[in-house]
Length: 168
Image (cartoon, rainbow, N blue to C red; front, side, top):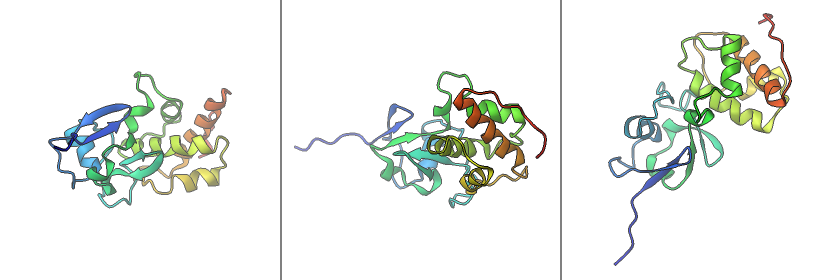
């Protein structure tokens, strides 16, 4: 007799059994509808907008393009992992401080993307910031405040003060 284990997802450090999910559905659908993790947004379902960005085994991916079956046993981090204790992360606080949040639909994907980007580039240039977020569509802004928020967050992670300016 073989030892069959229940399929599970490891999301934000918590193991979830996914016996009620179809393994052929998108990971985004499973995260939102089966696990109740609603902060990743469902917009294009084609990997074009970045609103559903997550970390998948330490790689930034659009969760709408990953099948749930391919995520079994893998390490997944969603937007909810940025502030597990309820307080805002440096990136989230920077978005609030500079007014980078408009309607908020793109914000979860942007925050995950920026966290990943800043982990490998602590002192980015504006061009590097714009390139890093180029896969995330924001329909409300011209990206100026988003770029400013990344600047502020990068300074906050260094433990220095950043003065906000309104040049954007």
